[in-house]
Length: 419
Image 1 (cartoon, rainbow, N blue to C red):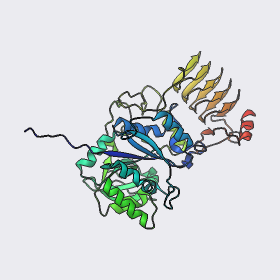
Image 2 (image 1 turned 180 degrees about the vertical axis):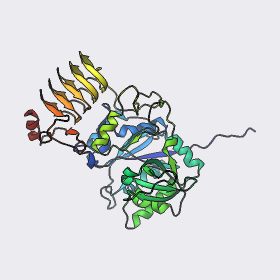
Image 3 (image 1 turned 120 degrees about the vertical axis):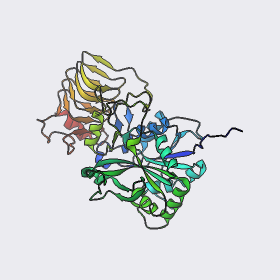
Image 4 (image 1 turned 60 degrees about the horizontal axis):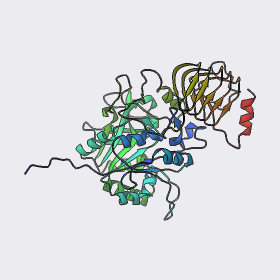
């Protein structure tokens, strides 16, 4: 009899943590959660993690939502209707509010409140991933690492400069990649022994053996705790379980071009980081090329006409479906869908969200314009000569942000029309 050498393929359930406020991204998160913020003219930030799972063949995904979730829920309903609803699905999971539970109190609490979903699916491994980063990752390779190293928990990690490591969970590993120390957002990050200029950071993406995860969450819920994976769960598991560090730089995504940045991953948690990540999509040799047919980023299907450009100068730009540009000058900018830009306007180093109208002769430089705004004719925003007392919102980086209009900001509209 011939030996069956097929390797057991574990059943994997993905839990996507998408409830973050994104306070440092205000005012873009004024009316939406961080994972729902538009990105790259067509996408939402959450599309990246969901596409990573989809492309990796992991099709059972629960999305934990909380803060200002309606925009995100609507996007998931339109863009992520997949599978049979049994083993292939993307479902929205709000706080359960049962048995005395309230709002999610932390990342671990979000999972603990939904243990019934894990038990119902009966996975071998649970993937707990965040929803607010821009990156591409073949999760099958991390899963293979997890199985080969006989890990109880695997943590995706990435070297970052020590100078900017205070905002991450910092990992210490032994020579076999086993984690021996974990500190969440330390004031003085410990550098990597072989590279004093960098520290090994957690990406906030974890693989758990199901029994280990359930036991850890139940124990965490019984005592005083931060109810957070980085601050509570992982440091305790280091003492009792085999917790391994998966190096994201070892991840080989199909179709990556030679000129792209190896291990491209961005925490787009500030206006400056968000703007720069958008700029990284531009040009002939972008650090992050989304025109990768072997690893596409899925989003809401296009239902509108192609963009229309009439006598325009366009250099290093992405322009969404249905947009109309008439005798305009566009340089190094992201233009969303159904945007109309009138004659004589000049747009440089900008990110313009969907359904925006920019009047004739307007000049915008280093400006982020949220959806449904109307920029009046002749307005000048941004640039080295700009007086910061005239702008609506300034970030510390010098970028101007025009928030999404609401019924309560008529004063903001009057200020814009007075420029």
